[in-house]
Each structure stands twice: as structure tokens, then as C-alpha cells.
Length: 300
Ligand SMILES: O=P(O)(O)OC[C@H]1O[C@](O)(COP(=O)(O)O)[C@@H](O)[C@@H]1O
Ligand SMILES: [Mg+2]
Ligand SMILES: [Mg+2]
Image (tube, protein in one colour):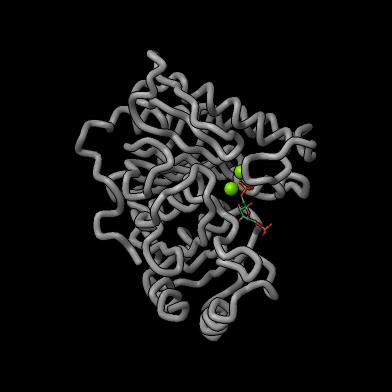
């Protein structure tokens, strides 16, 4: 399902802060990328979701915190790698937008040298916040080239990141009408019966090809490019799935909805899911409207 307004509007004057936050993430993207060699192994420390952190996860997190501290209009910083929200405004009162960041998305892809990303969500509300309070979201894709997708006010733009600056390569990015890719996470035997029934229907369409890369950002960028559906579903062993609402589900739902697609937790738009905890998980289904409608009908 898609919300009709694609999240909160930007009329309350956050334009400069949203733009500055996008620029700040772009500015550190080359440094994050350059720091990846030598930070590819897991350490003993775990993040608040209980996953072992790579040196690269915490390295990227530190750089992004520093970058957000310099952004006027951003009041707080939270990330997948930290337990608590941090005040980053000059006065230390946390006034301004809330930035929620997945510093490295798909970090288990670092060992086999595959695609990864960085995700930014900007909420006009204290964290944890509902997706409907988003005023902007973005991601960086560390692929063969570094690109960045930004979304705000119902519009999505794709840029190449060069020397820490963005050069626009595609404006008004929308999902193609003739979807051709799908990527579904979780072990197949762990899928629910209803989700397996959905997959069967998707696979019955001869124009649909499997593309699953183990980094949501890589898979989402394929959906934005070719049209289709990405899911990290509710599992028999984990009814809330794997991905995190504040750092992953909400910003990706917002971006896909701004690009004319739909998002769902199985029942409703991701942007309508109640936020109860900073690190709460949520099943994520995003893609072309028809494919998400079919998903919601099948899971009903
Ligand atoms: O290894 P799995 O179970 O396929 O999980 C892959 C999924 O988990 C993630 O890596 C989770 O993100 P993090 O790397 O930020 O923890 C997604 O990017 C990806 O879609
Ligand atoms: Mg992630
Ligand atoms: Mg991560």
C-alpha cells in the first residue's frame, strides 16, 4: 500500500537542513569507501540488534556522526550501531530534525567484496518516529561507482558521488511500469506458507527474474532501475523479520513511495507502522503497486 502523501511534507521550512544533511552524507561517502579495505572482519562487539559488528560498521558510524554534528537544523543522531540517540545540535538540546542512519547496509557483503550502502532517514519528530514523519531520505550505493539516491517532497533524484559532491544523473526517478526483478531474503524453508504462495505467483510471471544480492540497498537500486519487488519478509522463526524500521524499513519505504511505488509491512504502508522502539524490526515489502497489492491480498 502507498500513502497518498508519501510522508510528511516539507512546508515547515526544513529544506535547508534536509539538503545539508544529504550533502553531509555525500561528503563522507568517499572516506567511508576508502576506509573499507582492512576493516572487513567481524569483531567481538555486537550492535543493539545483537549482530557482530565489523570494524567498517563502527568506522562509518563515527564518520557519519561527525558529519551530522556539522549540519544546521539536525538535532539528534541515531544509528543501527548505537544503543541511544545522541544530541548533535550546537546547544545540546536536540532541537531540529532527527537523523537515523544505517552506516553500512549489507556489511556482510564486505568480506566477499560485494555491494553495500549507507542509508539516511530524516524525521521531523523525536525518535523512534513513524515513517509518516519523514521529510527526506537517501542512500549511497557503493557499487562499481558510488551513486546516491535522495528523496523529498515526493521526488527522487539519482546522483553520482564524485570527490564528496553530487552530480545529478537522473531526475524524477520512478519505478518502471513493466517490472522484471524480485529479491526475497530469509531462508526459503523459514518463509511462511502465505509468503511462499506469494513467491509462487511472482515466479509464475515469465518476465520476472531473481536478483538477490544480500545488501538491501543493492537490491532496492535494481527495483528502482528495472521495476519489481524486494522483500525481507516475516519468517516462521522471526515474525518481525530482520530489518529495522527506523534505519531501513521507513527510509526505503519513503524512497520507493516517492518513486511512485508502494511499501508494506504485510498489512499497511511502512510509513504507517507505529514506532515503539529505536531498534524494532519490521517485515519489509517494497516495489511496484500491483506487486505489493498482490502481496497484501495473499498475506491477508
Ligand atoms: O544475510 P541475509 O539474511 O540475506 O540478510 C541480508 C539483509 O540484511 C541486511 O544486510 C541488513 O543490513 P545490515 O547489513 O545493515 O545489518 C540487508 O542489507 C540485507 O537485505
Ligand atoms: Mg542494513
Ligand atoms: Mg548496517
